[in-house]
Amino acid sequence: MNGQVSLEKWSLWINELSDKNYVVIDNFLNTDCYKQVTTFLTAHIQNFKQAGIGALDQNLINKDIRGDATFWLDSKRDMELNLFWQKVEETIDVLNRECFLSLNGFEFHLTKYPPGAHYKRHLDQFQNRNNRLISVVIYLNEHWQPGNGGELEIYDNEQIINISPIANRCVLFRSDLVEHAVLTSNTNRFSLTGWLLHKPAALGKFFT
Image (tube, rainbow, N blue to C red; front, side, top):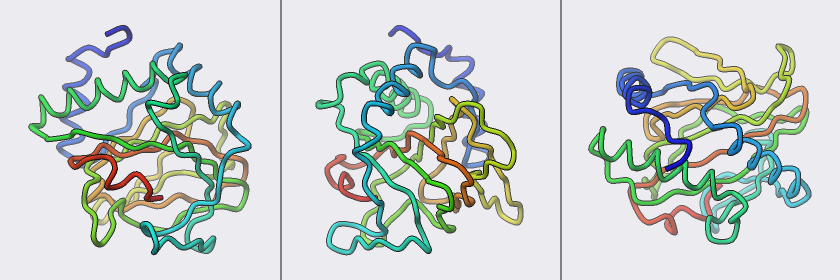
């Protein structure tokens, strides 16, 4: 597959993910793939909808907890993202082979945090749904600077880790173990966010 990462790099990332339950990877997408994603983002910026909390009929909008807006992606519909879908399949293949996981689906959306938006501490799991196994966040913020806000805050036992949302930085983490928050953004903050699933994607497709 064009643009695949070497097994040596994947091994380093997987070891860190196994040790800490999260890993930060800079320049995760190759140049063509990253450009494809940002071009798609620009073309669909008017289609974002306010995100809620909970699943299906329990989904509620509460900006005191979560203030972002999202645009859900579909791999069959959104063929303009073919390079990204290839990257997702590569990631699933490697994690299944090297970590003995049973990933067989995925769900992704584009995310926008407008100025003043944040997301309080939470896990990427629902009370009655546990099909999300690995969370994936890829940042799309060109020229991000300290003071722009929107950092990802990871709670690692007694430590708090702040991760800056710089362009093409990816964070992979265990959806069921890593509590995290998004700090208040002082400017528009964009990401491509998703989950690798160990049950059919349809079970989680409508969650936000």
